[in-house]
Image: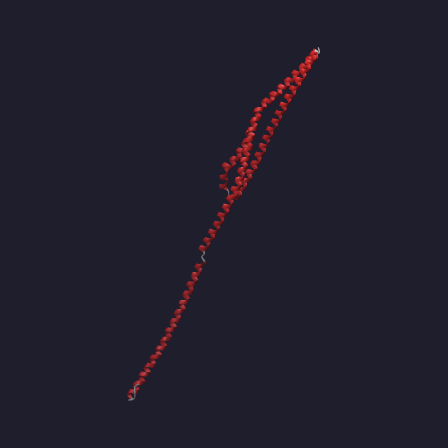
Length: 241
């Protein structure tokens, strides 16, 4: 019976002592959780088989006890019948036959006593095995419940891990966008365009200045000609206007 109990203890040790180390070493926690569930399920199946054997042995012991009780009752009835027959024969004067049936009654009584003793001796063991069997069944029920919890937690942890991975990918994408900001390139191109516009404007300004100088020179030449004309008219005694 102790061997059967160690199976349950081994499962408890697996889930209690090894789970953290297994998950810490796992490169892929999802695969490790799935493997843990498979191992746990297999261990429970193994324990369930062992507990079934234990319970089966208890039921066999109970059947043997019931057979002993029934046999004791049967031999008791035979002892009563043999003793009654002996009394009838003795009353009829047949002492030899009466003694023979009394002997048979004694044999039946010894058989009855033997079966009663065997049944009585088996009762504490059967009671103890039944108690252990109930504990094992209760332990198995708790383990199956824990397996359900483990599967639920596995789904939750996998969902959280995938969510964290998705968030990490988003953050990586955002970081890449920040490093390779397209607006930076646009700003550089814009600055290049502004410089080109300024250069063109400078050329236009230079061209305009040259043209203005030519017109100013032309106006100066016209003014000088008018002065010369008026001077000539003055000397000629003519009007100056």
